Length: 567
Image (tube, rainbow, N blue to C red; front, side):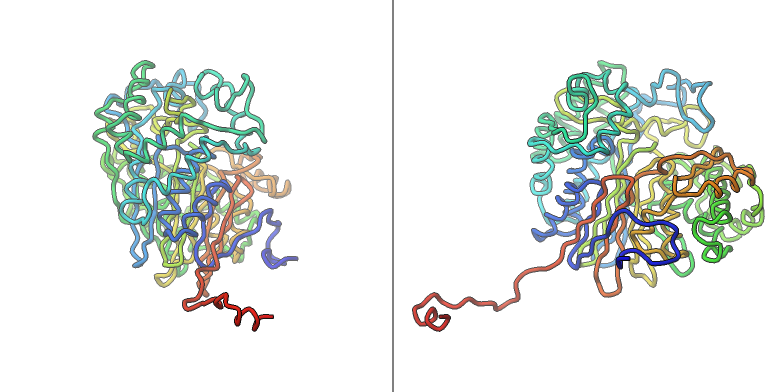
């Protein structure tokens, strides 16, 4: 057995191999995006240059997940050891309020569907985008390369084309009925009226031109320029809510990371309106009172316990986690050790139970993630999205970009913590985590997957800290998920395990995968960087090693005496 997989103690085998680098590491969910980021590092750029380059490239090669008309969080650790979060989330347009959509009375429990799918498909579903502004600011503040430098790979792939993977083709097939309704997006992903097939070449000349405009004008091309005008004109023609004033008023926000302790480690990530890290911290506080290592990975008892703490977290999330500019979020109570002890004491280790929120309320699912590090200690852990697969499932004519459907993340019912309101930021389950010990980074990880993001990130943290897994094992390990209804189990869990959990009262649902492809970096004590990506996406780690020639290297002069000496 090779040295990248442990010989014992883990009931599964990994499908991919990690990468190691001494000068930098780029892990994204597409090989071309990882290569683009590595190109920046090889050219002398830093982790921020590499991350922004990789993100722009992902908008071309992973267009169903991320775009310049989306939103997200970038969690940064700089060379001096300081950490910051750059929030570029979507916001409700001023023309949107709690009564904008009518909740669908036939929707499944926990669903946010509105009648006619108006909040999920089409122009009415689009929130004010934040990614482009955030990426440009990140590069300007902390990068060393110019915008044209980092955009070049993305423009190249958009104009020249790239080969569709099975992953992209499967995503197209899943959304084909919606994509077929829009002539612009159909040109790219439904050639000849049929879903794109793996192996076909995908090019998008209009988007290449849009990126060239961004290269020239920066974020202003969207927020006060031609791209924004095209987006607004299209929205007004088709019943959307975006207005020019929404774009012109948009601002990102700099935030301090939220910090939660667990068994001597410090888990850090974005604070609300990002819901992931606060509920990861809440769950870790509860789980700290159990010996997870003794329970064993994937055992009936450990899966049951995970399901119960996830239900607790989701009950509290639904009640009280939203944009703190609109709703006071009880972060201190959620992370309080006493509150964790109360919730822990109520867990029945033999039976599943229903959970209600223990905090007082003040009143999607398809994403991408990158983890990037350089030799000087900079880390970029960024989760970005257009929300659902292919966002709002149309393409703005003339610009080749797919808008988000972020309004689907809000509760269409009035009077909830996460109800719609003008200017309100999207609440997200994103969890771009940097885990420290004694102030030094140990791991950086994150993944796509909507409501399944933070539970999956949590499980990776437990795999690394409690179960002693290798990085590759931790990202590929089978996952579970529930928010209080069915308990989803990936295929690697045995039928005997599923039967035992059902006997404890969990309604079991078998699923091919929980959430998407995780991208992770481990910071080794000898300074090496290890990167890993999992089987759930086209994830690819690329490590940069080697370096420049040693100073003082000289070549012999090509004189006759020197040549004779060589002979």
